[in-house]
Length: 282
Image (tube, rainbow, N blue to C red):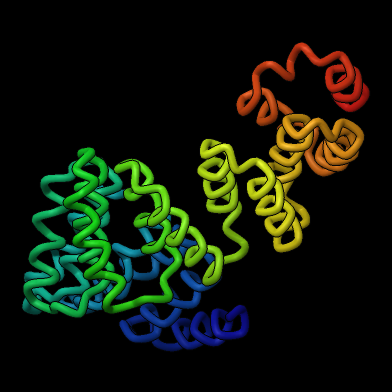
């Protein structure tokens, strides 16, 4: 991409009014996660070719990466001045409103998206997310299932399903969904933690600890997993193993030791744990 940037910059030096060159330069910046520079280059492309709808759309995407959702919405809507609305743009606007926690607006745009393209899995999913936010968990399941019908290997969709089932007290279904999450995305640390929590709350402590062991195998550098394993080892009475996991966790990231106490506050009174942590926290 850096070679592409040099090429397009040299091309622009010789032809500064090439909207295509500015657009391609912007896309190259975007791929390198240089979003501010990408936005500037998209603006030049738009300045030269005012009706360049693709440049507006990609500029909106760059603004989203910078968490500038209100600006992104306005830019996405500008594409409608130059081309008919499409499902992708409606979905993108819906996602921005979702990030702004304006769930009614978000749902409205997601519905426009699926009406235009019923195969828009992200928009079906988005409708479910807005309902989940409003604690309408049972309703959200319908839309998560619609999304999964279109993309059944999407770990994010399964994660949302697992969470909704859990909130509805349908624990067996939640556990099945968590297995799917981790099948498709074994590096999702949050999913491993949540899954093990569900097992722990059901009194399935051995399974929770075995799940955490699998999590660590897939994410050996995630300190959060080791801290959680400490809690499980102490709960199982395996103090020495718990101490070993604690030392590993502290070596990886001592600043996250608070995670252990958030999960099992009573461990703050354990003199062994406090003494070990004090060796790492100055």
